[in-house]
Amino acid sequence: MKGARRPEVRLPPLEPWDDGALEPDGDYDGLAFREADFAGQDGAGARFMDCALTGCAFDETGLRHARVLDSVLTGIRGVGTDLAEATLRDVELVDARLGGTQLHGAVLERVVIRGGKIDYLNLRTAKLRDVVFESCVLVEPDFGDAVLERVEFTDCTLKGADFNGVTMKDVDLRGAAELGIARGVERLAGAVISMSQLLDLAPVLAAQLGIRVEG
Image (spheres, rainbow, N blue to C red):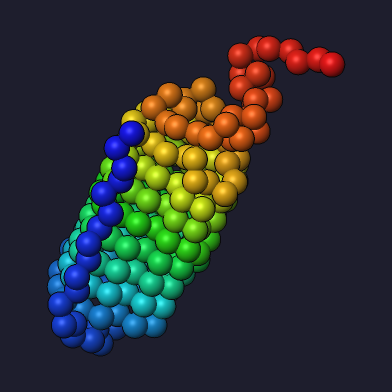
C-alpha cells in the first residue's frame, strides 16, 4: 500500500489582512488572517495562496469554487460553510470546529486535517488524493460517490460514515480510533483494515451479504 504524501507548507513572511470583507474572485496572496469574521460573506471563486488563517469564523460563508493553496488554517470555525467544487492543495487544517461544511465535488490533494471536530461533512463526488485525517473526530461524514486515493485515517474517530458508491485505492483505515460505517461497507475494496476492525464490522458485513448469524 502506498502511503499518503503530506503537504510541506513553508509560509513566507506574511502581511496582515485588514480589509474587512471577502470578495468574489478575490486574490489573496501571502496574507495572515487572524480572528476575522467572514460569516455570511461571499468569496466564491477566491484564491488563497501562501496564507495563514487563524481563529477565523466562516458561518454560512460562500466559498464555492475557491482555491486554497499552500496555506495553513488553524482553529477556524463555522456552520454551513460552502466550499463546493473548491480546490485544496498543500493545505494543513488544524483544530477546526465545523458543522455542515459543503465540499461536494471538491478536489483535495496533499491535505492534512489534524485535530478538531467536523460534523456532517459533505464530500459527495469529491476527489481526495494524498489526504490524511489525523486525531480528529468526523461525525456522519458523507463520502458518497467520492474517489479516495492514498487516504489515511490516523487516530481518527469516524462515526456513522457514509461510503455509499465510493471508489477506494490505497486507503488505510487501520489507524482509525473508531470506525463506524453507516452505509457502503461493501465499498471497502481498495482499503486496508485491521483484524479487530474486521471483527467489529462483521455484523454489518453479514447483514449486507444477507447472512443470518445465530447461536
